[in-house]
Length: 414
Image 1: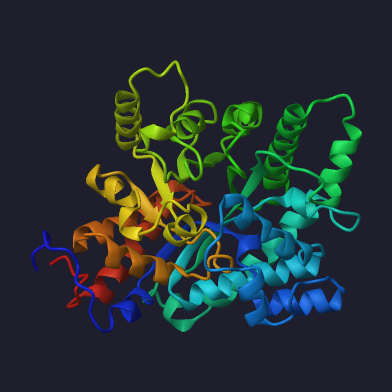
Image 2: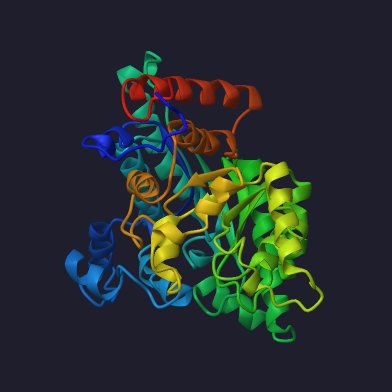
């Protein structure tokens, strides 16, 4: 098979994509709640929803398109409302893992903001322990399957990424009390202190509980909330050997990505959609915008910094993106960047890893070897919660299984 020819879409391709071992390195727990579960918990807890049917919520809340990132983020208010008790966190995490396993995803890094769930019933430790309970239960059940025990198929693993917020209001009981207690601090200082508290808590709980908390993240609206405001928290995480990933270039330009790398020690970049857009650079000190972007891209390429690409999510939150074929993933491919396909939010974006991969093949010229690399990047650039030697062995096992499943199909590189 000519590796230079792009993969052609054929009958049965989506079924193959649903079986191959995959990863999702950028998926939010609160953006991936089953709607049936959201409705069920809301009824139990007497939480008001715009609708109590799946169809109604998909029409009124979880839309096909949003005006901007800010409107997209408002959907999390409904999901977070049903995640305020230990048993609900465990259930939602468990179901999320099952949904991934169902479509062949063998490794996930689940991210969420623990501070959105801290209340009178739960401190940060309780929040993280119960999310881990759900994920661990799903992992143990899957890895007891005969085909996994025999070594015929690779096992399922996961990591937890804690997300600090670029900015916050009284979004939760914790944040409301946090803001009230800092009466002499300005808003930016409060946001930075919130990130620092999360970093300290995540490291402490990781070490004392032995939880697979593998990464520290910064999420939320970029405009007006520069990454550099949170550098102390990321420096702390960096010094404690915790990996870093940062939402950057999702709704802002290359400067946001630059800050994530230089100020926050980012190992990976979430989204990176505007990486190549010189029109988004507004710093007057950057005289040659083209050169700035070229050097930034070259740095990312040389250091094999992986970009967590979320196609559907970007299409929904960026009104200027009319056709997915115009997504910057095309340029990432051309520049040979390390990029992996992710969902961002399975429920909010009504997607799966399989659907995202199908979209990539439909809108970009991807050869079998390039597609294989994209899959492999997900495993290789993961923040795997174990020894590097075991990670290498696991990646090899997943790759062998991938090659076995694609043999004789349009994905075959031979």
